[in-house]
Amino acid sequence: MLLPFASWLHNTSISLALQRQVAWLWPFCETLHFAGLALLLGVAGMFDLRLMGFMKRVPISVVKEFMPWALVGFSLNLITGIIFVVSQPAQYFGNPTWWVKVMFLIIAGLNAFIFETAYGRRAAALPAGEDTPTPLKIIAAVSLISWAGVLWAGRMLPFLGAGVGAGL
Amino acid sequence: MEDFLLRLQESDFGMWVSSAPTIFAYPTILMLHTVGLAMVVGPAWLLDVRLLGYGARLPVETLRGVFRVMWIGFFINATTGIALFISEADDKGLKWIFWVKLASIALALVVTSRLRRQVFSVTPAADVAAPKARSLAKASLVLWLVAITAGRLMAYIK
Image 1 (cartoon, each protein chain N blue to C red):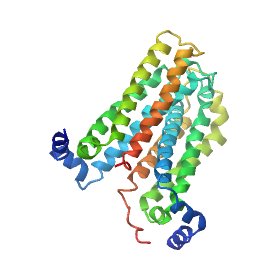
Image 2 (image 1 turned 60 degrees about the horizontal axis):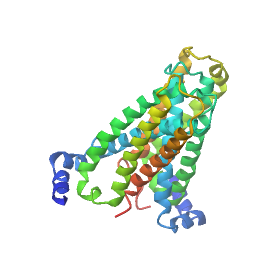
Image 3 (image 1 turned 135 degrees about the horizontal axis):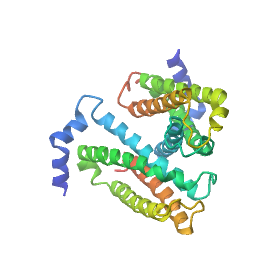
Image 4 (image 1 turned 180 degrees about the vertical axis):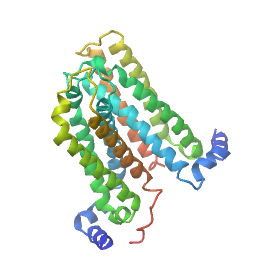
């Protein structure tokens, strides 16, 4: 089911246009993908560390003000990531490691959603110096682990499972 | 010079990194290099945008600890970077873009240490950054971006 989808996507006009693009488009997007990764993990990672109980001097609401920068990083990576997948669909859909990356992304997303809906306000109300309750520590740990998983699987893409879908 | 680079690359260690048939050699070292990148550049950019006026409710003093995260990241990247370099010394060492990367990192380190002295030599650190600190923050933003870009382009520029 996926391979027909991949070959269909590969033949869409947008994918063909991207494939014919200038040689520097791919390295350019990769560079943005790395810069976005640093922003996302740097900023969200700091927030997670605060939720885990580090840097207690800082109120959570204040650290949270920097989260838009993590979103900037995430958006950069989502856009460049879509460009990668649309231009070389089989290379990704056919690689089990890519699905591991997607799985970690879904976990990270759900985890962030649970945080926002169930604990966002309560967390923001915690004053400086106060330790965080256990559920918040767990959410922060899941966040750190799942983003690390995204990075791990992303970086392993060319080495683990590559070629499974090759020749499509 | 080239002879030396080739000897590095063909050393037991260099050969292990580049061609051991395990994901724990080259792939894992490369992955850790990306982890270190996030630990250095993420916190650096966070501090930079704060000094440039973003998120002014956050006391600058509370960011005193980011240097610890950056140092750990830098240690990871110096170590993994040396290992990666050895494994491809005869290739990377002859590329001008590699030296652009090293130069921008060296400059970024100088800028970071001056920024640290400028901003955190007083306690608590001032919440409105002085013009000099702002210039250093801008330089840091740009230099780390150049380092990332040059690093990525090492895979493309011959």
